[in-house]
Length: 520
Image (tube, helix red, strand yellow):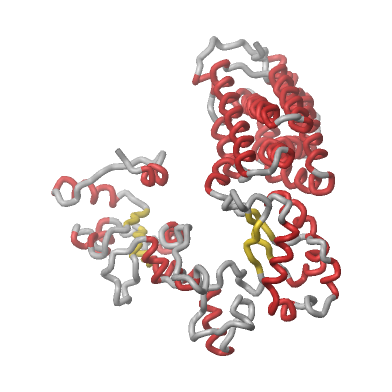
């Protein structure tokens, strides 16, 4: 059985196990190399040579081959023979020595700075070599060391080392001006790099939730609005606070005052307040938060995966005759509509809808019922359960159409209303389940328009408009509703989302009325 880590990284990839120590396996490997564009390896140092697959031999087999190789250290390093894992690369690349608190040991980051980061550096090199091959006709060898890749991400700390050697101190570090500096860049805890002081600050619920924090940055050009945001307008003109240099000696006193202001606010509420003043900030999200909460992109991928299913193949049903005359009439109607107006409108409307589903609806429910991470996770879980149920329902029924589109929109509108006025948490959870079901039915029905209208005989404006609407909805619609919710507040944003969902269903009648004759 494959390890979970292997499965996570290699899911949906084709694979072949080859024993290159046998003549048969070596021959298969050489045959693959002759027809390959790129070969990537990260074996222990010297392994490829011992297999009889040196770079010189690879060039003989395929002069156009781009050969990518990852090792722990570069070929000129005295440690080039060492085997290396991610944490070793972080240590040797300078990340550990500058991560953690000044009174603690060097610390390894939870992010894969040595592994995934090195792979991305190699990918850049491979793409460059492929581009060069278009001009020269020859491949290249690309070698990337994990130590060098980590060091590249530590370039700000490397800059700080040069400053420290010249000045003897680093004013944006917590050790300045009351602490001491040695001859190497110290660990700065959660201090911000790049000259903008920042820190991780406690929010409401930190006693029970280890991630009830936000990262708060004191940006020089926004000091005045920051003072307004945290309820300290008098600081804006106070000589003891007015410049970064004046603030640094008592920077932790400032952060302590901000934490007092944050004491009755969840991290999400705090971010929603200070973002209006353009304060650089963000909530501390756990891995559980990333799995269930507010990453519109990853959540969108889940929805897109559901929508990409051809439900008619999952559950075959007798084909429903389509009236060609009605379809052509619908296409002629679409041809008379300004091409740019309807796609943009659909994008904004569906984007509003997806924003509500992903963010505003559970956020409102969470803030209404205590604002704990457990509550938030329960509401997001209810949305997800409803979305899965809606997807399974569509796969089983294999029916779409205008009537179902409108019913799903109505269901979502009712669910939004229930969340807005829910008397109990149980009611809000039930409403979130309903919202998840209705949303996936709504989006799947719209996607079915693409599937049916993309028939070669009817491929045209209907397909183009719906494709643009669904694919472009989040990047255009979400910023629109996000800006409006900042101004009007979450309850008004919820109402707007419900209205947008209904409007999208009504507007959706113009292509679906003629292009989808598969209701019931």
